[in-house]
Image 1 (cartoon, rainbow, N blue to C red):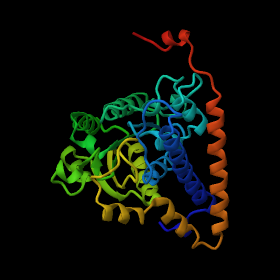
Image 2 (tube, rainbow, N blue to C red):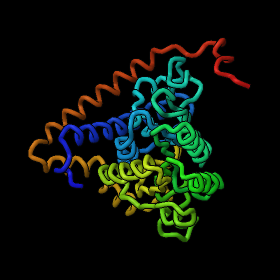
Image 3 (tube, rainbow, N blue to C red):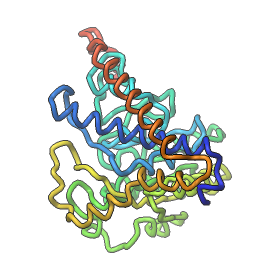
Image 4 (cartoon, rainbow, N blue to C red):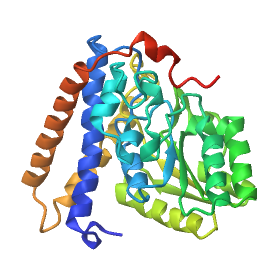
Length: 322
């Protein structure tokens, strides 16, 4: 579908949500580089259309699982910048009470269990969540985000096999950004498209332009409907690219310069912004105002997060079940 076939408010919201993720990630990057924030980070600049496109097609009570690169998924699913930033600063009022950090953000009340940093670890969890939904005869869908590197893990094959044979309402979303850390995807598989692996499990697979937020939204909307109708699961491969390192200390020397430049021209926010300005009811000034609002929102969230207290010694024994 073209941009002209959607309501202005919906499209502007998509743009704002992608911009929020980008601004959040850029500010967090500098906080880590200056030593203000503890731990480490794995960021998603360049992949915003994947997170926003998928989550915009879901219902509020649908559930997702995420990876060691979870900030974008969390923001797209409805977590606030404040609760995530407090968590990243180690604050006791963060979304995981300061116990998760960057690689484990989440809020189960908003449909996102804490992210799992083990590569492929969220795939069997999403499958189990989908099984629970089916057994309880609930209409929700489970969505599992993972990278191209996870498709070589046993959990990928085991999770999808179970999802397939039980016809579970789960969408397996592979964010194929071409690299598993520093290893190119064509070095780990001879399949030109990861989505083609779906045939081995007897489910539908689809490769989508992952930097096109509307293409991702439509593919997810159709997949979700299929799952709700009892015809799941579905494997979606979103072809995208991270414009940052695998982690904060990665200089990306393994990415050819011409490749980086080519993907930078396909930046999902820039491309979508230009498309919006082709409408009669959107001007560049509108997008500039959104950017200013987003920058102010993230700046305010950072100040809030800086002032939150750290967990206490008594918190060591809370939320422990074994």
